[in-house]
Image (cartoon, rainbow, N blue to C red; front, side, top):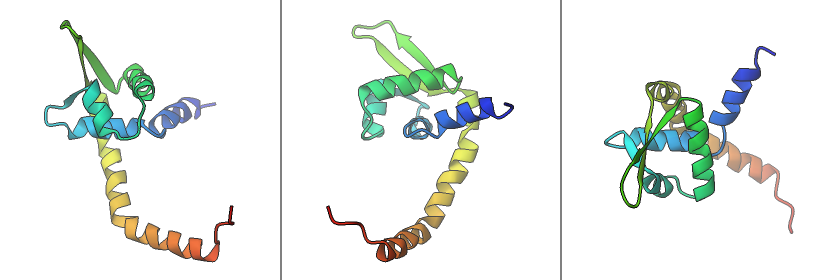
Length: 120
């Protein structure tokens, strides 16, 4: 049972969108992004999924949400100190992928050549 909390957080951070959102916030010049900016920068994410993922990241203490009392309301998101500390291993993972991507692509080509897809 000692791995249960670890598993839950790894499930969250390893989902399809969380790391892309964290990475997008980290790349911002101001360290903050509006919801619409995140929608544009995380291609393929739905508005509903972005809302849900941001809510989970906020709950886990990775992201803060600030609402500005304007019409229409402006909402900005920012990584917390805790969220920024996650960038250290995330950057290492991204660097590893970039370094190893040619080898991975070659492995895929070899595998796909030896295991042709069945015709539909």
